[in-house]
Picture 1 (cartoon, rainbow, N blue to C red):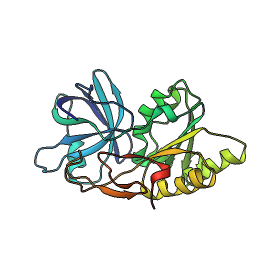
Picture 2: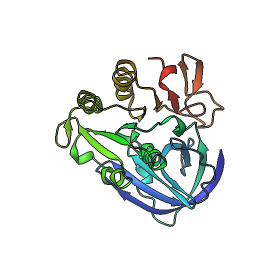
Picture 3: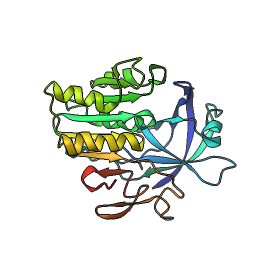
Picture 4: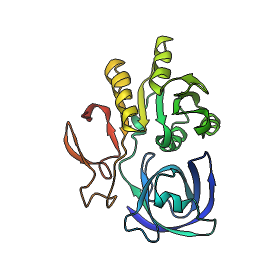
Length: 250
């Protein structure tokens, strides 16, 4: 964990409820895709944990959804403003397990950490499945394509791409004879459970899953985000948010 001050360079709306913020600052604490930062906001006791979308030597990018007072206030922050940020938090994805044909599956605000992961896996034959409720909520599809990844979109209302959920898009790939060496996923819990059932248990593909959980401190001291796994209790903010599929309990 490393504390530092970051300067906002850009803060713009991507969809009606989703925003992108780009900040400059010291990112030496970021060690792996899938980690998160914790942002201190004036007037709020608890910091806001947000996954890292991209990290470069001189700054990082986050994508956040407006869900409450804190994230609503973040939309009003302008370029030049300075933020107190904890970086290098959590256990990220293990890219050494990817193999030649990794599959990345993301839904909603679970999509951002997969972008940095896809960039780290640029030498592999990467397939990305992105799930949204509707075409209006889509974002970063072209950005993934620019990394050289094959991108498949699924929307619940059928307004773009495959009609249905990410698991429906996965089923179409498997039915067409596609094979994958490892999967990585991040998204809301119902999606993660469906991916676990269809991709890990039924298709037998090994993988890693990133979980969301309410956090207090964000660095493992308060134990507020502990969850039971096959290997005992683990703190989502410390041993997670990424867990191996084989250790997950539902």
